[in-house]
Image (cartoon, rainbow, N blue to C red; front, side):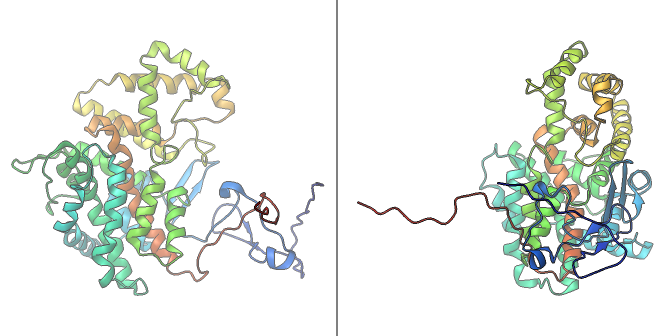
Amino acid sequence: MTQKYVKAVISDTPDEAALPVLEGALGPSAVDIQTLYARYGLLAYDPGFRSTASCKSAITFVDGDNGVLLYRGYPIEELAEHSDFVEVAYLLMNGELPTPEQRKTFDLLIGQSNLLHEQIMNFFRGFRRDAHPMAVMVGVVGALSAFYHDVMDIRNPEDRMLAAVRLIAKMPMIAAASYTYSTGRPQRYPNNRLDYSSNVLQMMFGQPNDDYPVDPVVARALDRILILHADHEQNASTSTVRLAASSGANPFACISAGIASLWGPAHGGANEAVLKMLMEIGSVDNIPKAIARAKDKNDSFRLMGFGHRIYKNFDPRSRVIQKSTHEVLSHLGIHDPLLEIAMRLEEIALKDDYFVERKLYPNVDFYSGILLRAMGFPMNMFTAIFALARTAGWVSHWLELQQESHGIDRPRQLYVGKAKRKLPTKK
């Protein structure tokens, strides 16, 4: 079969054959190929959508070449330093930071919506005690649809916003209950006198029959983790949420789909994979051997937490979380051998030509697992905390998509199967 080629010419003068170029506020331009099939009978082939802008969005901007991440125009480093997660969630959902009065109202809404219906608590008892928290969260979040579908009209902006707030408000208790149930402990309820991250900690680790003094240093570090993971443009889970939402599905079903997508080890499970890798390395003395194995194409071993599909420079989130990790371990007086391995591994890798040439810099997952472990989170809860944080981004994209009118998403394919053929005659 002869390979055919189409030449693309960028021109300032439109004609009948021209496809328009769309300009964004930042980043690369996009060729509008919506009429490509109707005009020429051709489809665009882009496995994994690496060169496809699937939508227009004003929420998050990533510049992977220069290591930039902006939420609604604000650098992630500044938000992590000067804001808290609830403020960032409001920003992602509404486009602007809240005024004091708007923040007060938003806090009140979260406080009014953060409890789970007692019948939902019965759902947890239907799972095995050793079920992965993400499996539980997929089921429980999806089940919220059965409790709110009759009082929610997604065509109504107020109902949409209430649904989004409910998801952000209830996710801490859902995540915490998925853990406490596995340990056989009764579940604590939210305390509206505490901030969002402190509530996560007290529901995770506190006992119902005793006070739980929240460590402010740990709570602040958790808040930073939530901010850093709140959104990240059109990643796999966010794209899943938007795809489901394009069908008109209710937001609880859409977020449940996002959680399922996030669960994959190449996405939300990456920080857990980093921790397992550090455990496999075992000691600083084994680092040279680990690096040699990572360079060997015939060896299945990989250095997890280095490089990123988007960032071809430093992941801007990694510096923030590295600093937080040192602060928490120092504050708690923890000497974690895995941190020593991680620091030495980073130091060696950043000087190694193999990693430098390929721009394999540490990403946010490299340190987040160590930090979560220092806080007391078990390894199987790492992705659940990621899902809790990313809910803010998911609901923001769900809200944004409701303003669009392009209809249900329907990707096409390049068919490579059998041509039409007759069914064999049976003897």
